[in-house]
Length: 250
Image 1 (cartoon, rainbow, N blue to C red):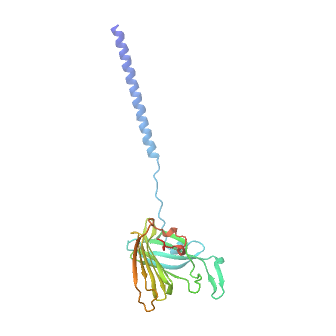
Image 2: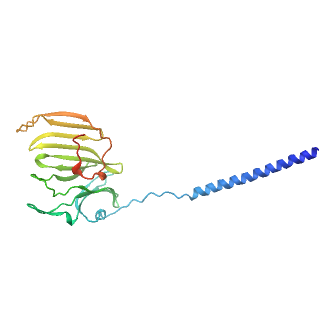
Image 3: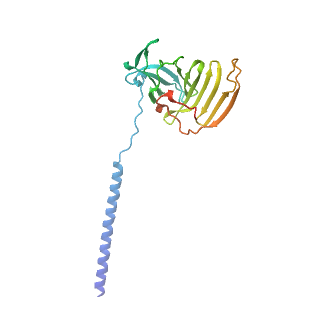
């Protein structure tokens, strides 16, 4: 009887050992399979940065170069490039009663970063500026010019006796973002209001001339400082039309 029980116990132990070995092999194969699967996962490659030596290669079809500005935008000591372009659509040419044939094609901007071996595209907006031949009514249309100074891009409008306004952009967040606005509203030589907005500190300062009827440059300014509600910075690439930017209600 004892021998019979011993045989049963030995049989159970053998079965247990065999099953354990089988489970161990299965587990090992499973782990090996997982390792193989991980090896087969392809690495994600970052897109190659396209560098071009010729500035003309960045100008899109049906556009021509209009102006070129150089200066350091990303603080690397190299002169970056801002291209101003203009459309060439023949249907945008008009014949003005007094001014003759005028090209009303809109203008755009392309910002290129200097990479020593060539230029890399940073920002583009092909259609955000009106033509230089817009109708100014009883006065000439505002004149547009560009400047790079202290790693910032300044887009300036001057309107003679009516004043000026200027936009300050800085390269950040994969775009040029609007960080400042300054403007002056004039009546001839008399300044009526001066406005300055810092979009980083959310501060707006307005200097109002409370002696606006003076004719001898004797302006008296009253300063008013407020906080603006705008929190999201405007990106150069997303501006549809600079003529429609209005910060008077900020």
